[in-house]
Amino acid sequence: MVNKSLRDKVIERLDSMKQEAIETSHFIHANPEPGLEEFKASERLTEILARHGFAIEKPVGNLATAFKARAKGASAGPRIAFLAEYDSLGLLGHACGHNIIGTASTFAGIALQPFMKELPGETLVIGTPGEESFGGKVTLLQNGVFADVDIAMMVHPSNETRLHTHSLAMQLMEFEFHGRASHAAAMPWQGINALDALIQMFISVDQMRKQQHPSVRTPGVITYGGERPNVVPDRAVGLFSCRGKNYDELQEVIRRVENCARGAALATGATVDIRPIGHPYKEIRPNPTLSRLFEKNFRALGGVADEAREKGQGSVDIGNISHVLPCIHPNIKISSSDVPIHTDEFRECAASPAGDEGMLLAAKTLALTALDVFMEPELLNQMKKEMQRS
Image: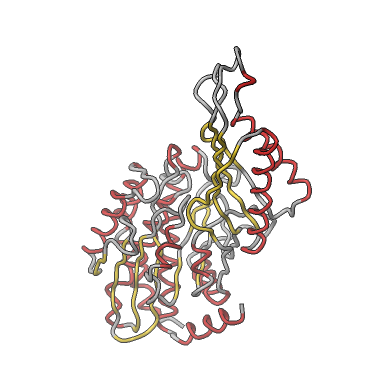
């Protein structure tokens, strides 16, 4: 397998950059930016990559905060990309820990850069903005950014360590109801209540859950419901996250949720405009060989995975990439299991000593997994055969 001295050099290099990596993660954490507006994070990461010898392309894929950093090897070989995310969750800040993702992927690439002159292939770090609600990786895929990539990897922080992860297919949908305004006390009969229509939609979606598969998820929020209680709302807007175990099931979920909206509009006399927001996310297909390599390196570094048991699944835009080339998206624990992600508590963990430790472990494991493939390029052919079978 991997030459031990080269493996040790990669780990030593990451250890020597520990403080810089932590400071980078904390900078992104302290400066949260919403999807597609991550200018500070993108600039910070590309500045560091350029300083450590990477050639930078920026912007790429028609996304202003996306980038592609390259470190070429001694000859042709596997082209391995570490995917960096750095968008926040709006007012919640980095409650999904993307400061850790962006930093771990960046420093995994930097750890390998000096040794690429001895290795075949190419190390890439690709900045992928707008994961939370837009699907930036899908735009980059469609615009050819992954055309010269053989393998893509990233690690996500979580409240449990899961080395072989799965995800749900997802589409964000916006439903805008239109009615007619009127005085809500003096002459309500002259109005058509758009908010009533939206509430009726919520009730219908909730009733639908009784007969839907356990893998289906349809959470929603009201983003606009009117201005004053004495005015019949003539406009109301809801945002729903439609999810299914795979892309085919997702299409059926969307169809049923749309019917709930149309039925609510018909029942109340309102009209409804239906719009998808961002790209559909496909379910992830983690590559078996790449997953095994990651697990081997994770355990060799002293990592401990949580016991296998039923766990809820989210949705990730790397899922679309995994249908095209070998990918992995393991989770590494940075908090206790009773701290769910997308919360204030998890946000604090993302800049804690446990978060720093998880980030550094992720960077080391990613770098060593890529090193395995550089040293044994035949592993890439094995992964491609698995892609064809799936």
